[in-house]
Length: 382
Ligand SMILES: [Zn+2]
Image (cartoon, rainbow, N blue to C red; front, side):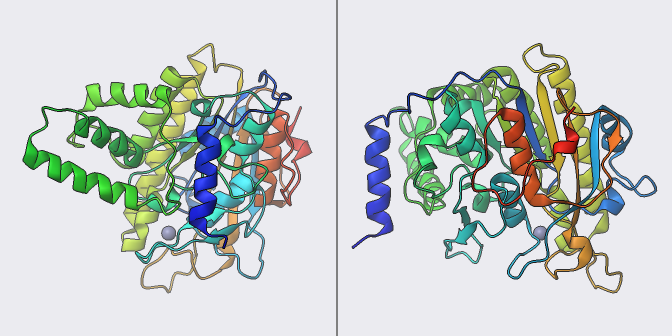
């Protein structure tokens, strides 16, 4: 009988055998790409609308350097949920509903892609090591730890991205702690328990070891921030810190940054939402400035900034700004694309579908997102 366990064991065996890369994989000479999820669900009204924006850097500075698409839409399809994991996977695969819920047992949806992600298209075509393709995730979204590769048999784990998140750091830290013979017995039991919980979050039952360059990254992080978790930045500021540091130390060619904190508005306080937008706006500023200041990235990096989903605009709700009711504004997003080869200071004012993002990024990198439903947005290219 075919079971997930057998399937995973097969994957593990081929990974251990050092699955040979096809001979056609080429050196990559195209631009770097930074895909920034302006995430946690944001409305146009608080981002790209000049009268209500909490993202002045995006709107007044960065937009001049690229093409602003003010009318990006998530298609109204049966079964499409305007939410974070779903929207993120739409961005990464160029399709709707290209995922399945594998369940977690903790009441959290746990989606995994069923079609190839941008990471896989890119690494299948080019000889790029896993640590140069990074997904940068928040600290409390274990359900987003599984977007590094899909289940399409022609792609998959051999072409995965690696991930930087506190979850991954803790996996690294607990392994180092347990490898230390001087660890006190009482502490050892505690660390073993913590590690077991971290491992249990991986429903695939097969977590590839983090590569040596990623482990070296975490060793530096641990040297600077220690083990307590109290010294490092938190929330979306953590994602900015991880991204800027990773650019300097790992030289990634493709990064996705999954900002998320505007979603704290689910707990009812609108200022959590608007403040989180401002923090993402600052973070984007810092990441772009880091690229501008580094010859490896300067004039050689395409940025794509776009939300996972919108949010509701119904003023009669007890808790405003929800996004699960399939309202029009929850389907309304935007995108800003800038960098070499992209038009400058332009507004592309026609409806563009969210499924166009992945094929557009693929086109900038010289690959084809063959399973994508959307097509590349030709009008953004110079
Ligand atoms: Zn939400």
